[in-house]
Image (cartoon, rainbow, N blue to C red):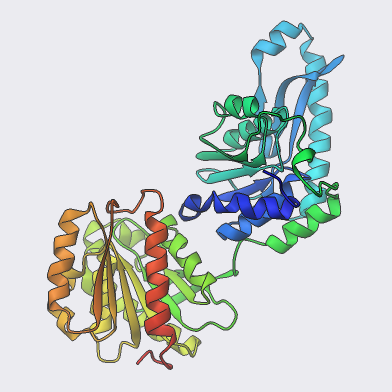
Length: 427
């Protein structure tokens, strides 16, 4: 497989990484050549982009033999076995580490220009390079990323030596490699243009990438006398805004709802991810199932939003949040122009279902049999335009590969068809 240049390689690599989008990954490029490739991956996934700056630690007087690697944030990976067999004094090894720490700090500052390093703890992380010959740098980078707290590490490259790919699988959770030709001698032979990437290009790409999508504004929404924290994203030329009503045990940081929100943002829809309960209120489980309380606050949040932006407003509900969204939509002055329920409990809206006039899409996993039955019962009570979509093979949280992407696509199409086309007020 031949690549035109690193941009072409990145775009083709991104096509094989789409299944990671719903997991809100962080994309890390290995400077310098890996950054143009990583830029295209991050842009396609709507993910934040950063560099992973690592320094291999070479044994004194035999620097090609690495005894470990260091990364930012104090991440340190040491091979005790190599240290022991090298027979080098501890103070000499410490001197090597101090020198490499200085160089690491210098390079990280030069690339980021004062921006903070993206936190990796608990995140899915995609480490990207333009190709792998020996695998030493890639292995060090993945080990450092794991030491920095990444929960799931993916190594993604356009081309690599087949034997190196096999070895690297032991260091990561997943390897994505487009081509591993048997007749591999160097990375550059698989590119038509393999000109050197400059430090200035790395800096420019990081600045262009930003945080992976439109900037979110942290807002406080007044609802029933209580200030609720929310994250508001308003893309340019927003055609409508969707308020997210989260389910039991979830909130505005839910990776599933944030993945759906990114898909809506890319389609030109604004989103408001909102915590309908304060941290203190969440401690009482009864509040999580108080559909009336959640619906009242969602209705207040919708009114707050309609005063702020002169575009139609819809609602996306998950679990108990779906019942709250439907009950709020049943009010005559709700202003909610369309509703989507993901794995929801619309049946908990009770008699209010009959009063809903907003077009409603119910999405349920094919293996979530109990919730399917509850959604069918709720659908019979609805008198508005509605549809039930069942995602084959998906369970309640849509954690299966590709399942959440289907949810996001269905929601995007529903809101685009039933919300954006309407005038202010969504009627």
